[in-house]
Amino acid sequence: MKKILSVLMVPLFCTACFAGCNSEPEDPLASLKSEQARTYAERSISLNESVKEKYWQNDALFMYHYYPNFTTDATGDMSTAFVWPYTENVAASWRIATLSDGAKEQVSDYYKALLDGFEYYRAFRTDYQVYCASRSTEIGMAAGDTYYDDNIWISREFLNAYEIFGDEEYLESSEGVAKFVWSGWADDELGGIYWCEQKKNSRNTCSNAPAALLFARLYEATGDEEWLDRAKRVYQWTYDTLRDPADNVYWDNISNEGNIQTWKFTYNTGSMIAAGVKLYEITKEQAYLDQAKASAAGAYGYWFKDKEGFDYKTIDSVNPWFNVLLFDAWVELYEYDPETTLVYIEAYEANLNHAYDMLHDGLMPSDWVNGWPKDDSGNPVIEKADVLDMAANSENFGTLAYFYEYVKE
Image 1 (cartoon, helix red, strand yellow):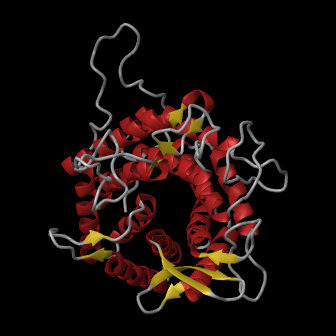
Image 2: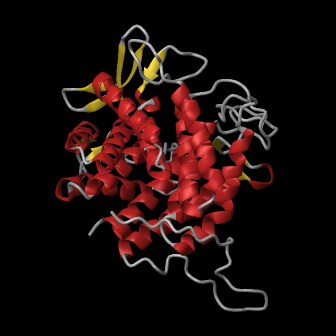
């Protein structure tokens, strides 16, 4: 699978021209050869810009949680984004940066500012580099609950930024946060990484499956065998403990007492598919790939359903962020099972395009099938649009653009 991860560092908007030049700005997507990729990249960038306009306060490196905003500062009801949705804004900008050097150039200042904004979530402690769920008004002074899954996503974004910009500090931060994640491994008979540091009462797929993928990627970036050993251990634990053998889709969590919560979410299964593909690429052990294929098929069967009035299978999941992790996993799997995986991807694409047709006020609904709530006159109403969903819509189209430009033959 081809990757486009240039380490060329360039300032934002320097494609336009230098002082005194009157020429038109260069097209940041000019290098894209696929018309489909270009269309989807334009949508990704437009949605990202809309999120930036509606939620982002650049002077304070601050992201609102909802739109419309309740207040003009961080004191209102859920005004400040938790670190989980904040992280997705970083991910959306990362995905745009992978589409072309021009797109990277255009998004770089915003992307780097978002990365800097992580420090307002950084816990005031010296044992690990760790980030809290809630934001502080001062850098490095956050307090409160620390979730292992939140820190997985943050470590992932530092690793992504390292691959984009080549800055060793991002890699050091990724490793530092990943060490905290590994500290959550339960050294008891049950095993697994806990969900929350302060409430060690469950071990969740969301704190284990993406950790396996993160650790495998850190092995690739550093050559440190310990990361690969941890990746294998966490992957195997999740596969053995939280996979539903009936369909190879993953349950949500297991309690300390061994009780399984059987909820199923797209991102959990997606994370395990992606981890399986990555471990196959590293080890060449066929079992990892076979397991990824089985879970990919299981996920398609579980979440994509026939619905009257639609000529494609509609997705039964209304969280765009959950969904993009499944989609990304299918994109990673495509190289090894293209004919089958393309069916999944094209159904996903149809759902995304349907949702985009319901664009309103520059934003796309989180419910891709039914769209926005309606008022008495049938007009769409944005009541509380979560920044997590809105940023993820941008990443979804960016991933679709990436697929058509760099993955699909």
